[in-house]
Length: 410
Ligand code: HAM
Image (tube, rainbow, N blue to C red):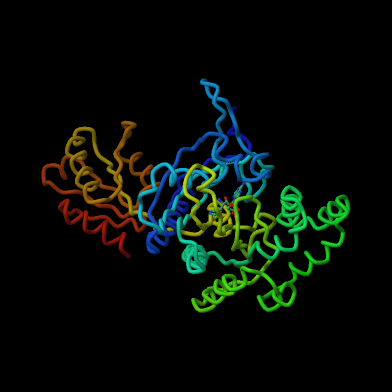
């Protein structure tokens, strides 16, 4: 038997209904904050991601050469594509630009619960607003989206400036390696690496930085940070808006394009793969040939949100199915059309089964049966059977539609 590729998933209707419901909630929050949806291709020129996304992502990319010999990649994330879109099409759009996306991404990772090779992200990019208000807004939108979905989580907010300040004596390539260890929280690896480049001295300062739990702690450690005012302002805005968060200056992020504020959210009830959102301030547009605009954004790991929420019930459309005799099929089809036109999902028999077998089948998948034989056809009515209670009554078609709708509104 052929199987789906490792790290991918199939979704049955119940799961898809749950996913669509949560997706709709996230979209609604994004839209509510003034963000509008964009969509970019599933594959892009490989270069888009190798320019600045970072070694981790590059190692995990699905790449291929197309028939024209061009190197392509399935998108591992959506920020670079959205900024490419901005450079291509968005130059004349008044700033700040608020865009959101809901897309599948591909990373060749070792699959486990909450970590897949194809996964979905809901993200926003706020392009061209280089201010603490913009940074605070992206955190607020992420917080609002997760909260609206009912996820229980902790939001950690930091800034790259203090870490870069401590690492300023290191060449950029070494800085990135150190930040890679910090991102993975691999402190033994970090110590070994610092020893290998004869900078053991940095270990304690970095650990001191990670231990800071508020801006006062931070500025007692590093007092001459040019970004101080801006950093304080972001935290003050979050406090004013009562967005729950903790300070964490150990956040390094796994992608290389971040330049300032960074944040990560962690679900309370997930295991190893508990990071459900990541984002921050970055600069990318100038690398793609556009103006150097400051931007910020985040992406929520939609699949991890779904794992965190579990098998929750979602509102379901009330449904009907026709059980009819063969001679009344035309009339039955007309009745079914009327029900569908009123927004009630309605099926008809396709197996030429007898009335009893049709009803037995409907009992397993519909809320109501519309029983139709010669008598119903001649009177222009339908016998409506509630498949939950067994109750049945003869009604004119509009009255039957109303009855089914009332059941759905309960
Ligand atoms: P990221 O942290 O690489 O950031 O991914 C965002 C979220 O996607 C993660 O927090 C996680 O929940 C989810 N995620 C990542 N990899 C997987 C996977 N293999 N399986 C399931 N979920 C996964 C970005 O992608 C940035 N583009 C975010 C951003 C937007 N920064 C600025 N704007």
